[in-house]
Image (cartoon, rainbow, N blue to C red; front, side, top):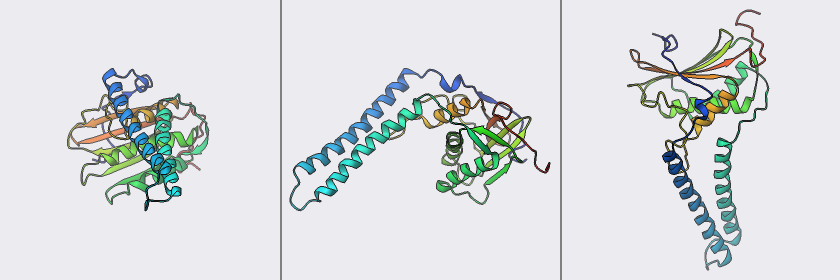
Length: 251
């Protein structure tokens, strides 16, 4: 059976779920991890300032110490800026893009860090479809979903990314072969702060889901037990996105 011909066993992530309330225990875990990471940044900054104020004989130059101060400040600032951007309100700056160009942007970003294996498949088929979207936010959101698939790939198992127009919807689908049904199938994408570790706060999929929801799009995630295939589908409603669509071969 081809990976993209599967019965519909859907778990739907609605816009409301993408902004659902967070468990207090998860918030507490996030705050502890963030405080720890920022404290490390500040400790590094304090050390660099001490070396700058009282350089020891034979140590690095003041210019190098000043560069270290700037690096430490930048690290803390970037960390807080990144978190703020992930929890802030989504503001879309729409412009027109073709489906083909959008998928090419996504592919370039994905394969930069996750080159395709010979058994992987990347197939785009959107005809002459264009849409009014926030190109870079939407691309980053879908890159997050595809990258998540590659990062959780089980050894030797293929990944497929397929896009097509179907019933006035532009669908981008990710197919992964898994040994077992993922435990987080129902909660996936809607639980920020659930898994935190140094420098990571569980906001990537949550932010991606919010961007997709802001475009009026849907995410469906399903697992087909007989073929062990996990399917993630993003459905962009073409009518709502001010689009034009010409099926392949129609011109």
